[in-house]
Amino acid sequence: MTENKQSLTSPTQRYSIHRALPYWYIACKSKNLRRKPIQVWIWNTPFVLFRNSQGVAHALLDRCPHRNVPLSAGRCIDGHIQCAYHGWKYNGKGDCLEVPALHGASTNKKRSVEAFPIKEQQGYIWLFTDSKNPPNHEPYTFERLDNPAYISIDYQADFDATLHATAENILDVPHTAFLHRGLFRGGETNLLDTKITRYLDRVECEFTGEPAPSGVMGKLLGAGANQVSHFDRFILPSIAQVDYRIGDARHLNATSVLTPLSDFKTRMYTSVTVKVSKWVSFIKPIATLFAYIVVKQDKDILKKQVEAIQHFSGESYMNTEVDCLGPFILRLLKKAANEQVIVKQDVGDEDPEKVISGKILA
Image (cartoon, rainbow, N blue to C red; front, side, top):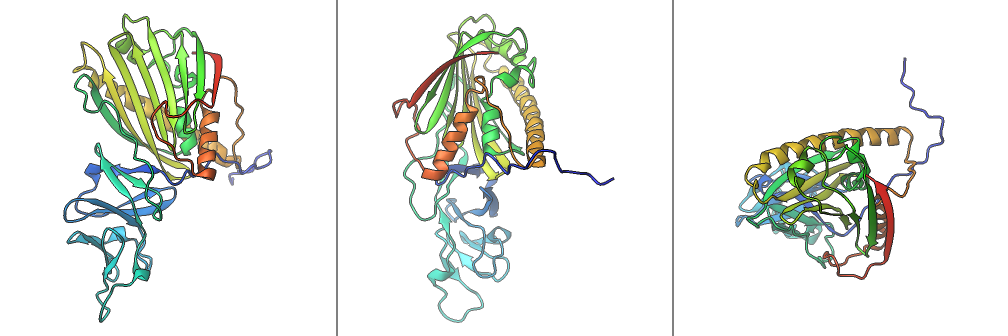
C-alpha cells in the first residue's frame, strides 16, 4: 500500500525560517581544522576552511570559479588551497595565484573566490557571513571558561530542526517536567513568577519563586539550597543561554551557540560551566552524562516535530502565556533577517523595549 502523505488540512507552507545575516556563526572547533581543508555549511551555503603556512585559518566560498568543483576536495600547498580538478591555486583572500595549464600570468580578479572574515578564539572558529563588508561587532565570548572555580563541559549535537525550534527547545521550561522528567524537574509543580524583558538584540526571562529543582541533577546542584536565581535568554543571532544560581556557592550556566547548517538542520555548540563549592572535581562525569541524555531526548522530539510540520506542509503553532520566549525569539530572527540589525552583545547595552510579567506552573 502506497503511503499517503496528503492531509485533510490545507497546506500552509509556513515555516519559522529567517536567515539572520550578516552575523558571526561558529564554523567548527579549532581542533577540527588541521592540515587538510574542510567543508562547513551555514544557511545552506558551503564554505571551505583551511590554514595557511602560519596556521592562520581562512574561509572561502567552497566553489572553484573554473568548473565549480568544491575546493574542499583539494589540498593545501604552501599555505594555499589547490583545486583537485585543474590545480587552480588560491590564497586566503581568495586571489587566484596559479592556473597550471595557462601560459603567462595567472592573476585576474575575475578568477577570485569570495573570502569571508574568520576569527579564532576559545577553541572555536567563527565565520562572518558577509564577504563584502567588514564586521562591525565581535563574535560572542564564552564566560568563565578560564575560571578555576568552575568546571567546563563542551559538547556539540546536530538537530533535525530549524534554528528557531532548537533555540526555543533549549529555553523552554515546561517541557522539562515531561520530556526530561526526573532529570531536572518532574516532581511537585510550583507556581513561578516570570518577567520577560525584551531588548533590541535579545530577550530574557527571569523566573522567581522557584525552589531547587527536584530531579537528579537538580538535587546534586541544589541540595540544601532554598534560594534559586534562574534566567533564560536568547541573543541574536543564535545564542541560547540558561543560567542557574542556587544558593550562594552553586552556579550553572549553559550557553549554546547554534549554527544553521541549513533551514532544517542546526548544529549546537554548548559550553556548560558549573560551580559547586565542594564537589567541583567530581561532578563533571555526572553532569556530562546528564547533558547527553537530555540532548538525545531533545533531538528525538525535535525530529518528530519537524517531520510532522513537513508532513502538513507548514507550521500551525498555538502559543499561550507559558511559551515565554519562543514567540519573541521568532520576532527577533525575523527582524534581523529583514533589517540586518546589529548591536553590542552585552546585557544592559540597550534600555528594555518592553517588560511582560506573568506566571507559570513548573
